[in-house]
Length: 292
View 1: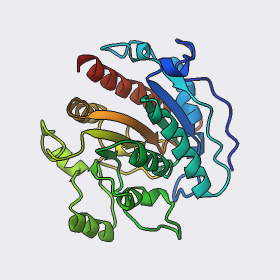
View 2 (view 1 turned 120 degrees about the vertical axis):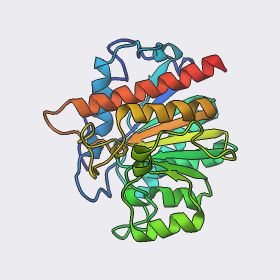
View 3 (view 1 turned 120 degrees about the horizontal axis):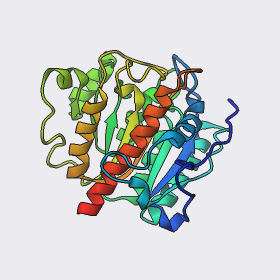
């Protein structure tokens, strides 16, 4: 198990750590890395994001999301068997949802999202998942385990949580067939590059409450090289936020995660990009709440 350094809380350079009840956003670092199948280093992702957040401006260009309160929890101990670790993650996310705050889970590999999925299934009615990802993640098992980062959305299927896929550009033939069989709604990267982003992205009957799971490899490797399985032809920064803005304006975000950052020694811009992503998404969410 990779030794994880201690980290400051998110935006510690600008704001004090608020009391739990005074924070809308609760950041939960989960430095889990067990099933990565190409590049390694995702266990260092949460700490790198927290460190890079110290360089953020409080003003995100439109508003100051931190005014709603951002509390950072201690990192989850990710030693032990996968089911036990996912249980800890589920418990942490469920505790935040229980007092109607927004969990922000920082991975680690994408498998950490499965713990969050279990929590939202139990705590939130009428909930769906928005998946940003280069990969479909619909395998039942991969490398001999159902707890692989390549199986995350198959586990969401097991929980009977509907989901919508955005940015996918790499999947097995079996996953392609499963998508068609189960009529999994999606907006793939190729479509986004060939056509304009639709005004209404989600189907009309998609659940009102949404959880966003964002694998950083959804972004093009030119702006996000620090990930274990980069894939060309990904989303641009402005595409991503145009998509998010339209989704957030149409639904209620109850939580989100950002996963699969694998920091590159001596290259700082990827983790700052992810910290900026986290904060800007908080901005979209807070402005929606303030205007509703």
